[in-house]
Length: 339
Image (cartoon, rainbow, N blue to C red):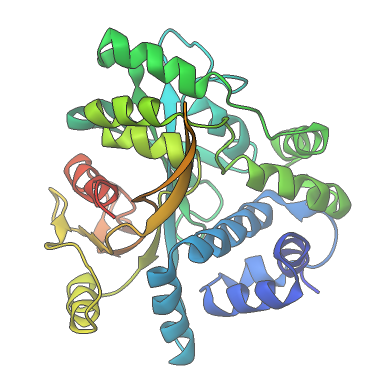
């Protein structure tokens, strides 16, 4: 069994691993590695496969689309996953986590990722960072990590944000720390150590703060739908993205099936990157009130589609345009404002 299959199966079970690895379009060298230590590239791909499996369990529309692709004998080319973090400013921690995107830089950088670009999301009072893989940037999914700048909001909002997020726990245990240290120094890790680390790394991409009071949620929502989303969903993938040849055709096809797709396709300033998405999946979340607990329906995560054109870079080398666009991102982020 390949290292990739072994790792994914250890996290989600043999049956689920077989399904997800069958539908994802994975570069052959990543799927073939089976001897010696686990490379950072294979561990990164395994992490992405498990996170893709997780979000498909939370987004039935995305799961239905993926199942249809698989039934038709087609693959899904996982382009990127997106997550949101909290930044209190002045490098202050978020509970037990490092500030904002740094909570994930400590995971992604040892696995071979680096920040490829920075994207101001000023309308949302956020900043996005695209983490691209150094070894296989076109084949291994990127991470779009955004951070919400709490200090740009009202003093009352800041107090409530601390009340909500100061309880954030760190999911990384000794096993994950050791494996990440090995990946950082050697670029590889023993298979057993990698298997022990993967569940802890996956757990970092979840909600890790405590119970949420309804009045706190409502106060955050009044100033920032994105902060309210983080309050209920944490650091889970906000969306996962399928790289397709013709996003416009996919959008029309999904609309024809009666599925709730974004009204228009977002087009980057260069014209080379085009994105659309399903509307966020409504989810039920429990809130605490003085009278007890109450369950409400709130926006969850969603599935996105992207088309990327190739271009000639300044050195005359043809490349896939892996960049993002601040305008596109802010338009796509609106999908979690209504479920």
